[in-house]
Amino acid sequence: MQHPQSPQPMPAKVLEIGKETVKLDLNHPLAGKKLKFDIELVKVE
Image 1 (cartoon, one colour):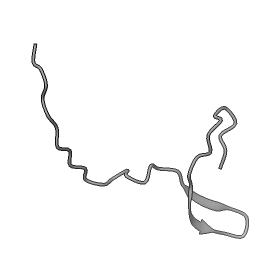
Image 2 (image 1 turned 60 degrees about the vertical axis):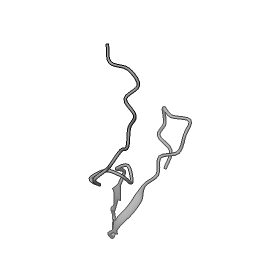
Image 3 (image 1 turned 90 degrees about the horizontal axis):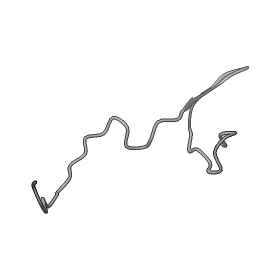
């Protein structure tokens, strides 16, 4: 899927196909997922 104001394509997942409509999920693949990060704190001011 291509947004008219963006040069990059938008990934979309087809959820449902009806007679006259198509239901898409345009969320980021990590939306709703639990994320864990390991970080290193370099400096505190």
